[in-house]
Length: 615
Image 1 (cartoon, rainbow, N blue to C red):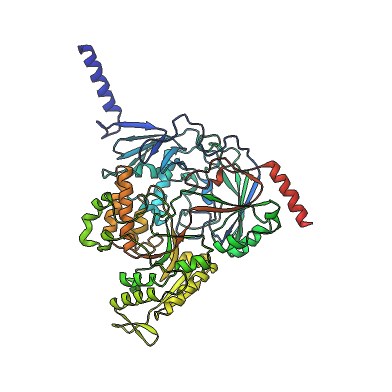
Image 2 (cartoon, one colour; image 1 turned 90 degrees about the vertical axis):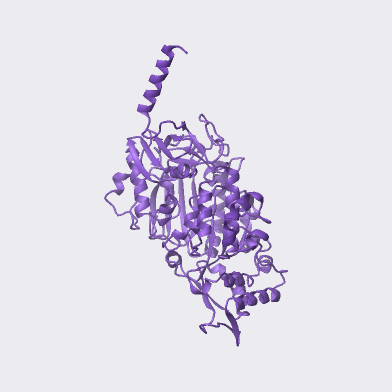
């Protein structure tokens, strides 16, 4: 090597050290259009659109949808109030997740993503074209402001989700840096890109923590056109939306107008749909799906009823115990009550056999534990052997089963044995605590009146154990407030999961979230083993380690008996008035309704049909 070449190399090295961010010398840095949790992004830097869209989909038309409940706020980011459905549509995020990969984020507001190999920090380079709806540019200062606003005044979920972030700073007008800390947390670089960017100039002189109905300034594909509090809200496609032709948006957001009408209960909502009051519906009541989707519009082909398979992680739904209550602190009590729920009879008699029993917190995914622990899971679990029940290591978790006949005498005998071990006994026809003399009485809090038909057989079986379960159905606002305050004994809750669980698990199961009102740790779990496995999950270095750690977490949660598992289905049950067209590919991890569009020919026929019905 000549002296001239050596000098040239030294100059380059010195210049790179001077121009690099402080503390970055010696770190391999990449700048990319997208970031995958593991492996490489599916779509290259020059991709034109996602595979599951029709890039030539026509824009236009209106769609009406129905929802149950009410709303009193247009702010979906805070704990107070009930936010209107769809209110997140008005905001863009730094990045967008593709729906045919487990977890990959592609730049939107962020044109480029810069980070070192160890992902200890990330710099998002903003697109200079990005604009809020009032035409003002989106800057790094807006991103920093949004982050601080969410952490300090938003729903407690945000502070748990982003707990590992050490510092956020605007390097200049179009670059924002997140210091993610030295502790391995590969997911964190991706999930910071999910932040909705709020306009600093709008919110800085307003009370963000207070629910309200003033229409805010957004940046996304839709704006709020009009609303009637608690009754309906309409969004209109923003005509000068800055990212309309962006690759992540191509073929999406095709409807000119979207309206959500609110109904007081699912039965009323279903009747309204069949009467043509709204256009699209996803059904979650099996009896309705089996018996109510019929009549002339179905026979004439003007309402389409369809089941679409999916690979979506179904998470867990169940009767959740509030372990903050003395009644449910003993794991034997929680295990015992599961023997009084007869899923097989319920599924056959009430659900027309449409559901699968959930045996995992990550149902319908490769993340679900099954059988006895494999070698990868055992490596993780062995560290906690002296703090976990033996069953975690020796058995496959399986909820109590029945033959579906409705005769569960055998299960109730098992339940009674567990209750006796926990210090309860039958006196007369009541289950009594031997120490305190108090009867076993609790309340199941429900939001959906239709769920009473599932609760009543459960109540009857519990009564045979001497347990009094009272069922109380409350309105949407009261249910949300009581759930936020953990003011319940038992609720029915669905705990959704992604294909790449991580930081959000702290908010679901972490001890630090158990006493913070508004978190999703409904059960009040305070378990150091759970906490430690969550941290291992968050720092998983590759997909294999993430899968094994998730399965280990799943087992610990299952054997903690924090809820009584219910059911799931791996299909979308959809019905819609025949005015839509959609791409030939359904995205693997979503229904992808935002890729559908109104077909002008079908819509014209439908308008004529509805007019004839009225006449």
